[in-house]
Length: 482
Image (cartoon, rainbow, N blue to C red):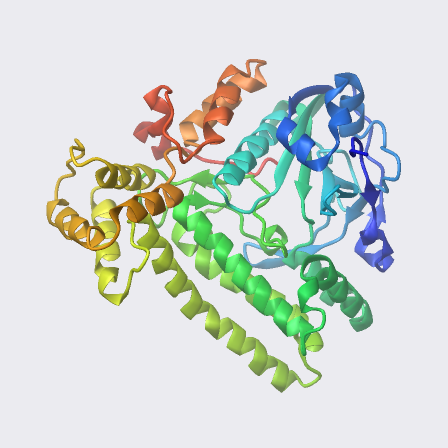
């Protein structure tokens, strides 16, 4: 029989009680369905949510708890801009872990669902604008083929949220393979016994990386795996010009999924120092710093695992140091591999690195659009009569064309089309769509969302969806939403 409703399991509540607090959502006034992710609903096998909007609004606002759900707020800590803090789910409640018909496990979390023991005097609520933003950007990332949390729904409420001024309230239903973070391990080390840390780490390995359970040193292999997956994730961000904006350890997923879309944005003009986040005043999480920051975050994770990797501190330190030393070699190698793919070289080698370096230098000097430069290069490979004639790049284009025609030109075209999107969530378009949607007009939001669901395919739409606004980006700032 086909699954049509929730199939909750609650394995997290079997952990030692320090890791969570049972917490029901705070009821809201007149919840209303504003957005439903129908394809995700089908994938999860919860089609009952499509039958009656009133029931759906009650369930996804937290006013009614679905059968077998055990709502909890998770405890965690984290380094925020380099400083350690005790944190926890201050405005999010985990309903439970939904098991699909394919035996896949997903956390179902209500974000903006009210105060918890970890709210730290906060109201536990979320603004409509910030939840719409997370819905839009997380879905854009999913269709860019980048590991990410998903957004199942946005439920509007009649509750007013105060963030320097009054805002409309909303609740987002977020779906992830889990909400376990580097910060959860920091919490375990700081506030739990060594035995509880061991229980927790074994739980995470069995849940996310069961293939490592029988390794000679499962915890060490776990560290290696997370480091590699996080590196691959950041490489994907660099590929499309994504800037997370708040890469704190509490926003670093053990499953290596992008999440927490607060002050994130996409880089338009290529400048490695690009920062849009209003709270990142020193550029700690600038575009170019993301690889170094993920390495820093992985050092924090490694530190929490040291007692479980080896009884000897000296031995554990040496094993961990080797993992972190390997990071630099792996990242540089994979970054060039990714960049080679963006210019159509499947067999790029040491001799091809100047092609990448010269192109990026030209882009920086000429303030070229990151996405559209590679889009135009893809068209150059596709169409010999392209009208794109960038100043000062003639010699480079000649060398590049000679190089890609050495091999199979069809393969080069296909590779570039896979790595280079035609469309990203342009900052001015995102803000325009949000402005309209907050005021009840979702036409722009839905149009942009539809375009971003096919980012690698050139579409018959207004060309403004492919270009950035220089005057807008010059003063653009993004905000955390809390």
